[in-house]
Amino acid sequence: MSAADSTPQTINLEDLPLAQLHKIKAQLEEEMDGLTTAFTQMKQAQAVFRECTSCIASLTPESQDKTILVPLTSSLYVPGKLSNIESVVVDIGTGYYVEKPTTDAIKYYDAKIEYVQTNAKKIQDTVEQKQASYRGLLEIMQYKLTQQQQKQQQKPAAASAK
Image (cartoon, rainbow, N blue to C red; front, side):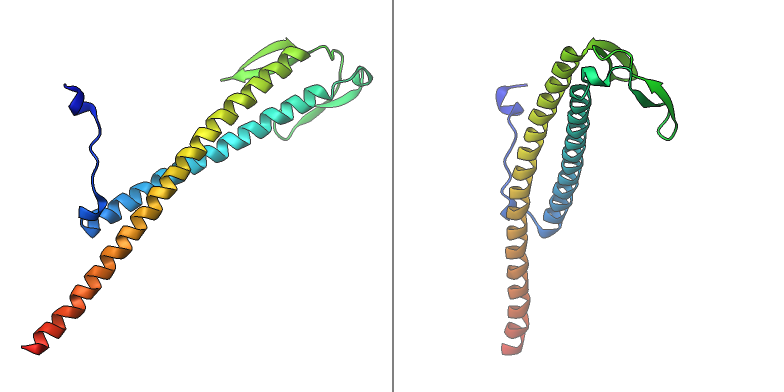
């Protein structure tokens, strides 16, 4: 495979028939929906990580030996006592948990927030590019529809002139 074969071809959208433009439009809409969903999930993950950081930061010496509710499931809580405020259990993904000092846990979640923020920005930039392409495609489709309507209006006029 040569270098010329690996470069993507550019296609002039104005040369494509309207039916093919509709397919490209549907594909762009699907891609934008997927990217928007991914962006929303990134923002939700970022909010969860920020909440984790906030909860860890709220552990003060005054909270030592306080009675708290410990979640067993999403709807079942049992009373417990906060015995160690120097370390926390951190969910590192796929069902694995690690005990970390609170300062390390905050650093871990801050790094996660930064990572998610960077990826969310990339997704947002991609969505903006797709939206610009989508708007351009709609303009071309509108132009082609207008041309098609003008041709149809000219045909009856030409037929009645004969």
